[in-house]
Length: 456
Length: 107
Image (cartoon, rainbow over all chains, first blue to last red):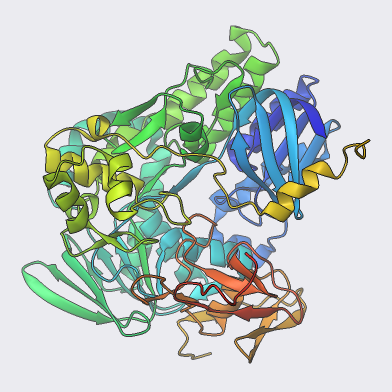
């Protein structure tokens, strides 16, 4: 049986919740699908249930996420947590699984608010158990009250410092911070600093985090390069070079971060046009100023349309909600001004935290496709014998054909092929993503037939 | 509390204790934990070995993206441990290497 929805939103993070709120306030009924068991997305994960203790550890920016929850009490909202979307078609039919049953909803309008995922940070040993992302450490803290203790943090970007301060607040020991931001990024980011001052609040927070971590006396290495993790059954150490010296740090848990990138799995599966941003080195779907894609009636809001952060994501959600409910340009104007303020810091951050080349285009011996265990050197060898792009690479080595469907290796494989061909990643292209974009069993599919009238 | 698992639980009195079985070994977890979080808290970081090189792998992203934490849960193979909440008496098994044709779950 196909259900109907005037507006279907995929994703219950800041963009999805704010979009639902705006649409409901204007009298539109909303179906909100989210993979997670509770609202908030990854940034405000578990916000509805977090106690004071947890909010103190995670900080005021996290606690602020509560303000988005009022939408859940609005009339006209059909909130469906634990719903896994595995296909969205250009005619706005949305296929998902909920509690072991498959559903198809025909929606008049769709807002995709599927957020971001961590940029891959491939280097030798990054596949060892115990090597995880900083985002994973934050999720454990938010959702499970579990803190990595004695971990080494390696990488670059604001989240690296944020999770370190949160771990400190949780009483955890931090083994070391190994920052990989290349030294040349600092002068290169300076021209963007004046504009970033319009978002001075973010800069102040960054400085406050740096001061707190310095005061805590955490060993902090800058300009680290040539990273290599080692261990037998799990990670035991991280080796790297910094300041001309090689260091070897023992660790049971190694947390990586190299920024976040848009989750483009659904927009790619819709065959939408995506633009390549040389900074921050990622693709984003091409959208109009309301977030509408080239397929009429399908919108993208939040980090899935280009990394903007939680607050800007909520504003984009409201803009999409306004457009769908037929609001005027005048209603949108204050939102657009607020959005511009939020985005003022992006160029500065993107330039300052541009990943080092060794993580964008890793050396030959590094696994890039974790699922199928394909090395960077194999991808380069494919190019040497004529491979032009990521989809051809699949046929050579199965890169991108494992269970994660290229989510982890997609950017890296495009970068490596671009480097080997001496073209831009845009020209090298990206994996062709096909539905189902999440695993669905035949048993779940069979439930679609349950409600049909019996044959004969 | 000192420990050698690399992970530590924060006080959280509200949640009930549950026990899951990992490969024949009882693991104490809390209601609301994902299977991956419960195993990490118990110091179990390697949940499978890869089909190709038989290399150990464990949870990486904890948000359902990387599929590194695939395990067999109550007889169903290829379940994402980070996306599956624990329940009392749940039986979790590591997935070792490539699947054989004459055994394993129905995933």
